Length: 219
Ligand code: CA
Image (cartoon, rainbow, N blue to C red):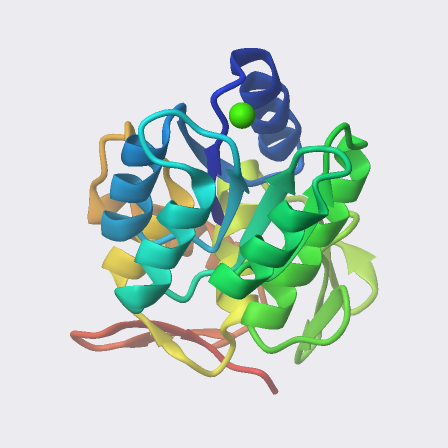
């Protein structure tokens, strides 16, 4: 799952990114509205954390522009404390949720998990696919009730496929959601990770759809 953080406060930006990476997300960051708008307009994100008060272009305008251009990724807006007008404007502009500053990192993480899950059409923190069960909060996958040992890359890959089970996902889409913008992307790497993941999973749970990509079957 790939997240964009748009926050001009360098310390806060770094804290958010660190917490998100620790929680297993891939993170891109921007420090002003223009850069943030550009990234959100050109890269596929599973969610965005967007500050309202930003240089170059304010957060509300960034969000309005994205929505006007049909960008539908979930957006969590960070508002200044007691600025109720920020919340109203944010929601009017198409925010999916907001957190007022100062916030506890745990709250941001919990709200993001909920947004990502809802966007993928899942009502709970746990997703099942056949013998597999993903606990998004704990960042764990079990197979027939036993914990699966996965590297962070394998976890991201499996988590993305499970959030989109029974859908055909192209290698490009997987690459875009597994790596940040600075990563040297090579779709062959995805094949290697899929190969490794398959060795840890039963039979045909991850199918190759010739010429199109992969599909995790829900069972
Ligand atoms: Ca700010």
